[in-house]
Length: 312
Image (cartoon, rainbow, N blue to C red; front, side, top):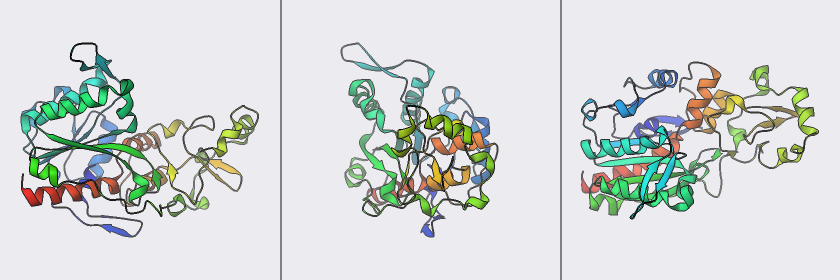
């Protein structure tokens, strides 16, 4: 999200100019993923459980961005119904609202999986929006498909944007698609086979095992990707991808392989000068959980317009 908010990068020979923004604070609980962040941004990330983060530690800011798990939401059977949580992950959403109430930035952006809209039979999402509104914000949301914005990936995510200013809220519109009718294919980001390490290929034994299983026909129903189309959604667990999983893989000249970390970075629209440090497992986790920078760039441009017209 931070790369997209800042801008000033290129992807597939297209420039995404710098926004009038500067990252002043970032936090994450994962030390190894934080090391990737520190390789690419001037602001050193604060490695901390957000539940232990005091609002006074966060500098004043105009835009708050964040993602939060949705798997652990539960709807408490009260009248009126309230949003609860099944485990510790469900608390993170409330921490974002806490910072909003205490720091009162002009705008916030939340990003989550499309499934958030249908969580708890569709009951959770309206309560999520209500919590943001109770924190003092006018809120809009929309599902954006990354492939509609120049990203070689069919990644649908719900973006939630809230403004303290009603005029800025009324002025804001989610970005119009730029490549909906002509999406970028993954052939534009695939690394030449002679540059791919053998560790990324599946063994003949694995392929033979799949051909004998009941799932062998599924390889042509979304797992083995077409080079002339955007990739299916890449996730955080690509390090554990197998031919029996639902994660996207490549089949080139009869050989199956997983995507390399750099290919996943490109599929997510990270520029090639974005540094990937640490193990492949850490890279896959960081990239799979990331927001596509190009999509966030487009969202930020519209936010800047709204704030520019009507102030903070």
